[in-house]
Length: 166
Image (tube, rainbow, N blue to C red; front, side, top):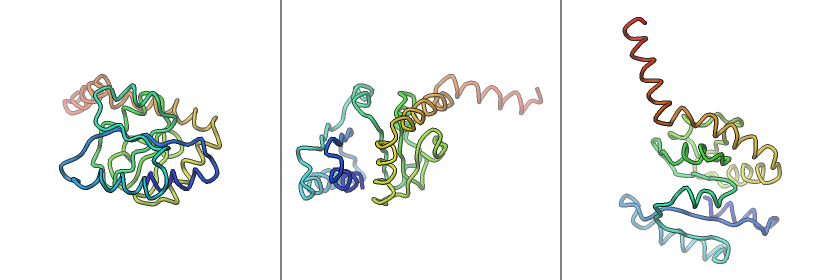
């Protein structure tokens, strides 16, 4: 989905590049080969980087202007709140767990899974409106706190206090 969206966007914005970070997953052993084939078929070999599995994910995210998480059914990956914590405007697919982290239009954008048209429009919205993209990133950073260790501890403490009537 992301590769197809990049191909569409590059027809009007040749400055757009794709960066994929992540390694092979046991549940999808053919994904990497399919991704490489799709990149080649769309003429994007010079415009998409497949970085593979990385330990220094924050550095790779720091090279991004927009973070896209287009998994078909992500239960709740921590990578979305991590990108939000870095102040990146995030686009994630639904249905799935990222909808729990993102307030649409405020702290990120949500698109239907596998919908190239929606993803393309969401990316173009951010590229064409840098002020909006910046605001989304600011809100993302602020709302990501609830997924931090401190945010979790505070919610747990409040739940326990409420349960015991305090």
